Length: 389
Ligand code: COA
Image 1 (cartoon, rainbow, N blue to C red):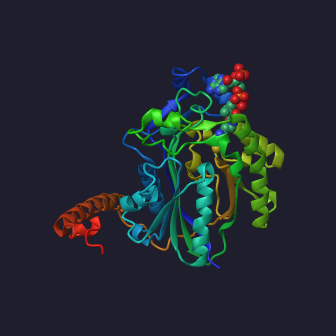
Image 2 (image 1 turned 135 degrees about the vertical axis):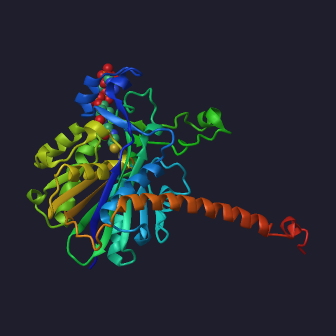
Image 3 (image 1 turned 180 degrees about the vertical axis):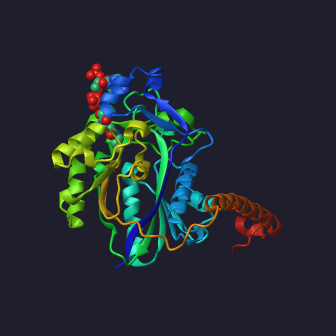
């Protein structure tokens, strides 16, 4: 049996801070309302040059440094995101290129705010079968690009960022011990984002969108119903995954929930009887970063000394789809097989610069090759069907 251990973790939050007061200067709301209803004070907003892929790269690079493995040792990259720059190439493929992870397969996974936990399960299964040894699992979002900044019911909630973990297969028991995944598509209308958000079909424009039933290319949410759904499924998920891992609830040392709303987690804590002190929350300064929220919170929990070796931690996600999922992880960070080298961090950054230059060179050489080779169908008449009998 191969166990999937988390051997590295890293997160990245954009520099720009957007406070509740700043939002209140644009829409009819105020800090008091937002803070008391959600627990959020501020969130980070990506600048124009940043995308889900660049945020994901930053988080993955930090996680690889912590894991002390080289990008060429990575076999699989999964990015959970609802805000990719492109449908294809996937965000994961972009990250693969930015890292120069030449031996990795890469794909995106779409399960909204549950995406990171879903992706963690996929990578764990791949490690369990032996087809993958090292995997990077990333949650990355630029939610600020898919919000209607005039809709006070949604724009106050979300933020941008990315978090990543490196998983490694080992025969030592521990790591991701159990996971659960659920979906209920009948509730898809409660939290939705049309797929035309990034490039809203400029040639077709508003007219096309209105004729096709929507002028909206931003998040639509029925807050109260989502609140009720989350308060129901989160306790169920924690109990289900704890049972699968053979843990009693009091053996759970820390729960890292999807960071949507402190009141949701307070209601979960009451229902399930796990004290609030065992739930790690950072929604106050990060907002809801969708698929990125759990890995970002995990990194901050480690930095805050909230996780000790051999602790039992539960990740629990919920969101659009509707989807919900949980993972039970025995936090047993294995000692690195290699010692970090002198100026390791600087060397790594230089390698990433080379990786980008190499990707550009490949693009140019492909273009030149295509020009020199000419048309792949030199006898164009074949295409016209003139030679058909
Ligand atoms: N500022 C001030 N007032 C606001 C407001 C805002 N930002 N947003 C809504 N209101 C008003 C409403 O218009 C309503 O006014 P009314 O009573 O005069 O009609 C009132 O506040 C109550 O609205 P309601 O939507 O019932 O508030 P709520 O207590 O349910 O809080 C949410 C709204 C969005 C904070 C809450 O429903 C929530 O957090 N839901 C879960 C969302 C979530 O987690 N989504 C992501 C899941 S991954």
